[in-house]
Length: 345
Ligand code: FES
Ligand SMILES: [Fe+2]
Image 1 (cartoon, rainbow, N blue to C red):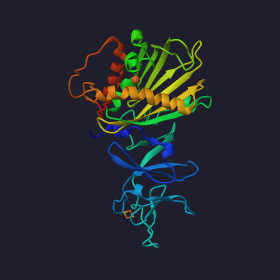
Image 2: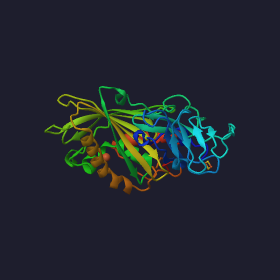
Image 3: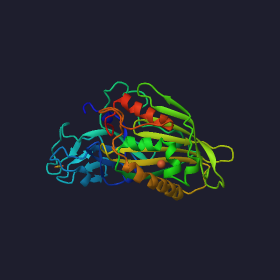
Image 4: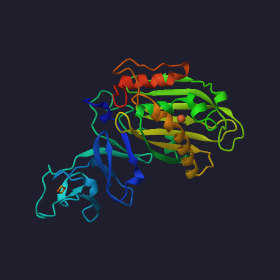
């Protein structure tokens, strides 16, 4: 798989509040990373480097962050070499008079903090369409940046399935009455309206408008069921946003972004960035609700075979489709058009 388009995409790797005053290890697409912050207290710049010291290969994530007159440095646990934010070795304690050359440098990756997550891109794009356009930066969800909305991060959820299977589950309204019976749907009201599916061209993803499903309790505080209208956006192959706008008698607007770090073809780690307005529930209650809903999805999604999503890449698709699967079919076409191999078959 080379060149690998997945390595040229931005991926969420960890909740930003997990990176404080000590280095943290995590892995993206098989690449061990060390994440650290230049200012442990002020929420400053986060760095993502290869978790391997250029001197003798020790894991930098076992080291320390030093702060001092020279600014913040990452200290290797083995011989104490100190690396500045630009990656250059700036001090070798065993030879304090030595000025390290430019080649004494850690391997750095692009890192950004957005929506409470740290996003990393392992390779600078050479794929047509990735250097600009919707995939050139970490995705932005408008409500999550609006001060009138409250944003809550849920997760991480580690799953034994592929990122595409999980995205497809998130886009699927027709499981609500069964998997989430009494919560998001009712088996006696299982019919759904798929609405309008708009498929982009090139690296543009898809949008769904006017999708509808029956909810037994339309919102917290509602005493009856209602048809609820949803909108979806899929701006990135491993990321989908669900919008539920306030409506007559329903004061609550939600935008929930499912953000996934693929951990191979059959595993992934997911977060929900939930932006909400008009909801009186506490952060803890919102997180508990998402946890409970996700616990209903997990056994079913992890039971799906194969775990990679069949998009007709390696063999003809053996799964059959119903009329309510138009969004899933559009999503599969998007992955195929982009050439996504990770988690697909
Ligand atoms: S291995 Fe990192 S300083 Fe020697
Ligand atoms: Fe679900």
